[in-house]
Length: 170
Image (cartoon, rainbow, N blue to C red; front, side, top):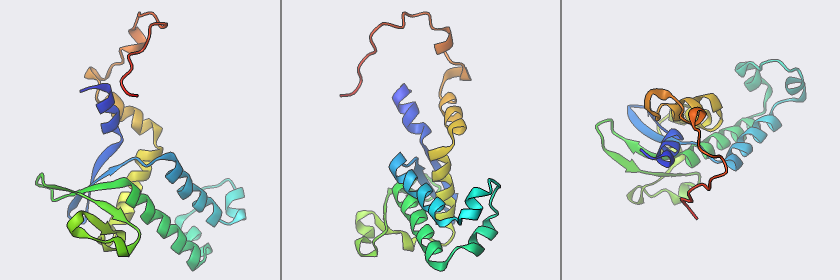
């Protein structure tokens, strides 16, 4: 497996939820920033400045229904950006594009409205997409798993560092 394939594969995963398998990928930094900014904007100043861990139940008790809806919309948007296939667990996969706008729903073209996803799936996929997008330690471990014997050859590389790097993409 090439290094580029290893990097690409380390940013995707398959998650079981609601008796189906879902292929998800890391989302880009701009999408991730929107989710993080919204969560920060929704939290109250005293919660944010306390420096302590925020209890999820306490957090939900302090936010307004509109703020909760906004957060749910961002969760759905994150899943729409990060989910790209649905499988039956027997090796059959359908490519999918999840969309926020229910008017774009067209299963014949592989386009599903996020509201049609079974209950509980959005939360499971959101958690995995966020982990793929933010957990640097896990990303390093996933990449290392693609190397033979899990050992890095870079530390033992005696090649001249000034040599040109092979160009693989333009």
